[in-house]
Image 1 (spheres, chains in turn blue, yellow):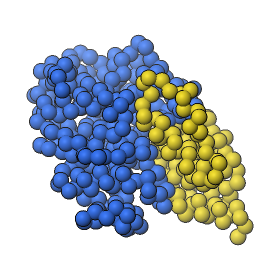
Image 2 (cartoon, rainbow over the protein chains, first blue to last red):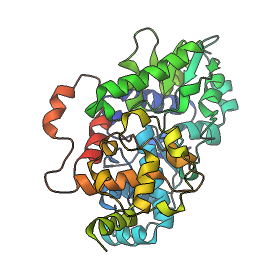
Image 3 (cartoon, one colour):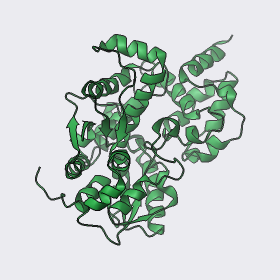
Image 4 (tube, each protein chain N blue to C red):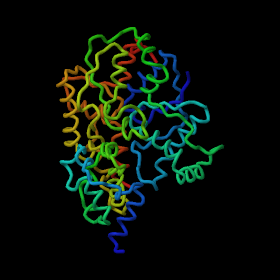
Length: 262
Length: 129
């Protein structure tokens, strides 16, 4: 299977582990992630105002690049996924945006939301299948109690994201089971980590992150995993005694490709 | 129509949602993780804008406290999506000349070796035009 891939700016810089292990694990599972040439930053925030178009054009370019190759578009970063998925929905439904974006971008053919946008976790669940992943695991993380941290951007608004049940998600817990570990379900797994308040009011994001960490530890978690670089940062800044890692790192470890070169 | 009412209508029109669909259940504020940090709360944004009032909202620190976590959007039984209204008010403030909430001068003090690019990009997109 070959999919188009949008890594995003953070995965090229501070979150290289999320990207590197994601690619290695995909290869081990028979999936090639083809990075979109000359992709541009998604902007990290989906602007909700209906008259906001300029900030969404980079996503439309990425979506159209995948369309031209006839491939689904895979994302890993929660923020990129949120932005690109919602912009794609706009390009299906918002007539004003469809007209203006296409008039400006002048693709060979107008873009109308044709590309299927899937998060890496959805690729594991829906395209490969957690049962197949279980079979491919050579180094099961037996007995390890792992807490999935979803945060906001993958789940909400569920009407558009269609990622999982927004109040009681199971996709990351199912992933944890597939790699042989034991999922820990805790109350704050889909609450916000404080997000970009880390720039304007770090005390607030620290307080929020602590609630998440305490909640996970209270349920016996030995490790927290996430798909979002900003969640990872906010959680890591506030804990020394429990590791916080990207889900792709654990996947690569379970598949025995973590230490592989390249 | 007075100026305040006209501005409120304009902000509502580009928010993409209709505050008059609200049935005042208060679920948005009840579910908001930032409730305690706010001076005016999500249900008040909905209520003020539904009745054409915006002046107090423009002065409110809430517009810089909303996390865009979409908890209120997800749980609103009437599809009002209060975070859209809070964002529309914020946009109408920071969109004015010299009204940026976040200045690039403040970034160096925040930089540390692990801070993801995403945090800076997102904050600028929210707080600066």
